[in-house]
Length: 545
Image 1 (spheres, one colour):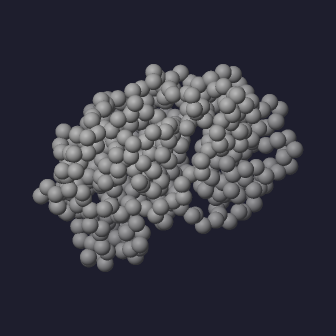
Image 2 (cartoon, rainbow, N blue to C red; image 1 turned 60 degrees about the vertical axis):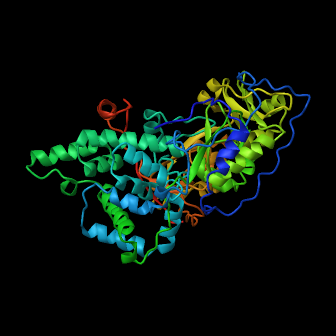
Image 3 (tube, rainbow, N blue to C red; image 1 turned 60 degrees about the horizontal axis):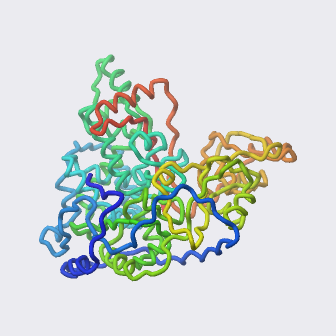
């Protein structure tokens, strides 16, 4: 997939704006509701010097740069071109190439979606942002366009979806598989949520699986269940003299439902009226364009310069973990056509600083209060932006995000931006680790926090999940307790009714550990066009929103 370089040469703003003016503006995209702007951060204490992380040399002043289609940088964007008026859904339909299945499970899921028109509307509206890009990439690789509908099954096309098994993004990569396919995950960003990077990785993975099984149905089963499991199921049927196709294999219910769900969505896209549903109109041109980033810039400022609600900015650029975009590791942002134009114009006029944050590497293991004093910020702000729980020490070598002094004009270096990590350790003699299994009906993070009299933020951090997540029945849960809290142990057996979720959260079964996992990854790596080393991928069901 063509990608923008980390440092694109600046192009004269007058030339760019004249070029953009020559292209008719496409229909205004449907944007999310505006959200309240982030409150301004307190100024750092002037007298407290910040020992900043190694920084790159000061860059040239930012100038307006060209707006491009990330897949076709050589093609001039013209929304009035005849091809741009084609119905994108029809383009998807014409590219179907995966064999259909017709079973009772397909009927079941057709009815499920047909009974939830509001859910389908939200899902397809959200997917409309990304569908053109994915269809373009699938056809460039000569892959079936059926696969463009897979994120509907994986995440309801939500690039910010996170499962309880830590699968993330609209393609739902678990951390290990993401690393196998070059999806960077560190303090500053998680490329499993990156629209371009995760799509590239998912299609690489699917191509590898198809090369292994030479059958798209089995490849999709392996994407959900793991290639080793599918191989064993095929071998088991072959030894018994049974057929080895998808419908003939013995598999878990989740995988048994996986292709019927996809088939149901395919059928709905092919004939929405037959199910009493309406698909949003999608034209055959990019929803978003790519704008190169050459200096560190606050996320809130970037959204404001683009005249884009912060929530919509995050929908297109969900990979950022912090309130700043680091140019060394994030070479571009994605923006709708008109907003890309507005961003380039506003950036050229902006006279103030672009970033109010920088990176700082802890020289030794220290308390958050000490790190805050050294970097000139409040302890509360340092803990909040870096998600440091109470009674935890910051280990030496950890990278923290801290306010950027006005006199500091250097951006964060590529080595820090790409390799930043945060390691914490309990204050000695203060905390002890307590692990238990969630109850039969599962427990929420907030319920565990309330029961053990700790903060929900801490519970989420200790278990690498989100504050509004719910643990599955039997899932291992960890809390860190002071000695005085010993009497609480065992209280986890009490039933806690989980609250109704307030936003979409994906759920997934964790991939079981197998001794053959490394061998499976090597097998897929050999077949991969990118020589990546895949591992089993946990799939998810997404809660209704």
